Length: 257
Image (tube, rainbow, N blue to C red; front, top):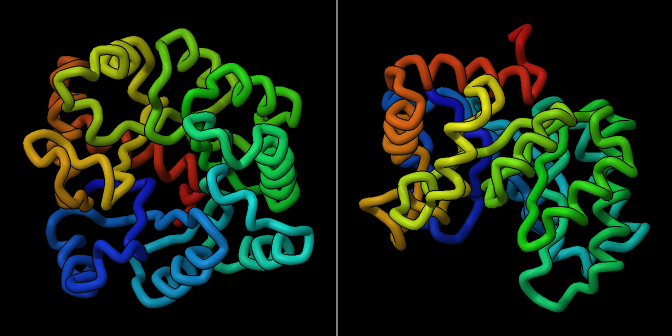
């Protein structure tokens, strides 16, 4: 069984075949998916998906690149959505310094606010961090993100940074990038940290693994990620599936289900 801990099936890339694709996933071994919001509009489409599909769960929040749309008033809608019975996390949230806007100050404001919301609601957080390793870590420490835990998704930093996040109680999200020829640093991370600290993800429709790089991604490609991790760790694909499944249940507080 495979748990896709980070997907965006509400994306327009799936408009033509979303229903048939989602209905095919369980029979292909993909038993659970967390659909992750990125802006105010996707909080609503994510909710709709989770309500329709038994295997789909929801994360509500606003991506750092979209924080300019947040106000104290509309932030209350995210607070309401975290009470939804299928909400398992606050996300995706964090810092993204790849572009100049929104300002770093604004991103940090809403990153902190969403961490505090997660702590209040006792939900884990899904962290997006690009070109902002130290600031992400420092803000998480300042806001005591260890009190909610979560995952640093689509991990792109060094094994030394991975150790710091793991020490804080966070999982590392690994997807299709680990299969890329130029992914030496991520493969070093996977080799270095315990498999008990890794969860599988697609970030679909993005980040398709080799040999589908550049094409639309889906959870059906996760066995390729499993095989790569198994090869790095020197274990079987079945072991990777079993351990990462249990990790995802712990991450999203589903152990009792």
